Length: 236
Image 1 (cartoon, rainbow, N blue to C red):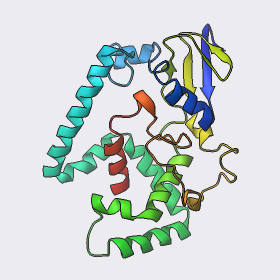
Image 2 (image 1 turned 45 degrees about the vertical axis):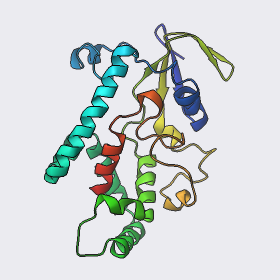
Image 3 (image 1 turned 60 degrees about the vertical axis):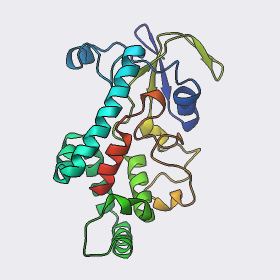
């Protein structure tokens, strides 16, 4: 479709998301012009809204290095982790996860039982415990499926003409990935309601490698703080 003169593509299925964010990732790695971002993000020169190119690639490398340095800093001052969580968009995810789990008493009881078996009742959960909490991991995935941080990912822009699934897409087209719809795709999910067991024996993770679940995006524009944000959410 078109918004004024701009061609718009909406990817609303895992297959479509994979085409744009993996197979043709480089073509759709840029960002469109955005007046709000020009004022709020240094004329679109921050990591989120900058156009794709050498400047953005170098900045991303620097940001990843900086995050690693911060991780060492927070090892020495662990009480600051909660401060980061409150400032991060992870806080939104934490609120949704709490509210969803509280609504399901059976899930709450099973989570409590798993925590007591794996961690015990005499200490706090540590990062090394997280991978052992299998039922808990499924609960996190299901909450992200139902409540992505945003219903649409930040828009992408194509940097050259291309053809995808028989459609000719011109340079300068804008891509919107509908993560809300992808999480409810009837061709992938027979039942859209809150069901943790759907992830038993599944390869779907939270890293964007399987395009049925994209809480941190995927490809070149995936969140550089993915692991940090996910760890904060799970620990909280």
